[in-house]
Length: 253
Image (cartoon, rainbow, N blue to C red; front, side):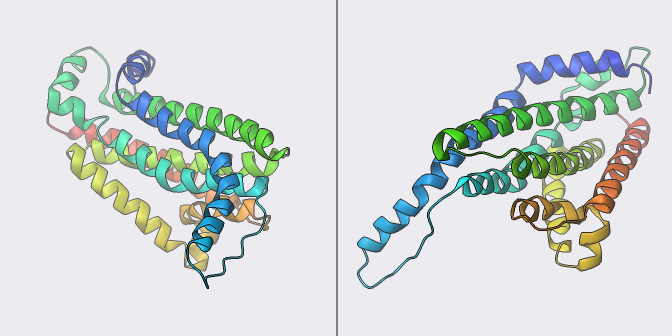
């Protein structure tokens, strides 16, 4: 794993210069700023639809801060998850295809360090933008609704970030073994499989699949046991990164 620090500096500079920062940051900040406003306007939009269709009755409760938070959690667990997978899918494969990886790895540093630095830098980017987005969501929610408790927003978001670490690890693993498009496609497929597994009770209680539904349930005030899912997700992410380092070390460049 030699050279992780050296690679990490390189990765951070590249993330700041490439499309990943504006895309991930732009998507997250867009949802953070518009989610509370959309939550406020949705009932009015539905009422306007009702007025244009006589005989159709749509009963919508008055929006509250929880509706704004629900918009954030929904976008986080769906759209931001997809963007994270796609951003990480080309992290290694892109450099291999362009020949950059060969030039970088001629230095006395390990391939394992190369992979680990990718994972750390990508997760740092995702987590920092999501944390900033969470703060903005809370602020805009307070301005719109006059109330914005911290726990119902921050606790589900932090739980999701652990799941995001696994998504980054899986995507980098795939990027270390196949081409970018294949890595993105398989990564999205793995995400869908984990989401489908959430309909099975034992998977929800003990596996990372539980973290696909836990944030939304936590927001609703349900008692959610996330201990085992958090543990298996964290251990799984570490194991996946280790496997990615081993497989990339054996790959012909």
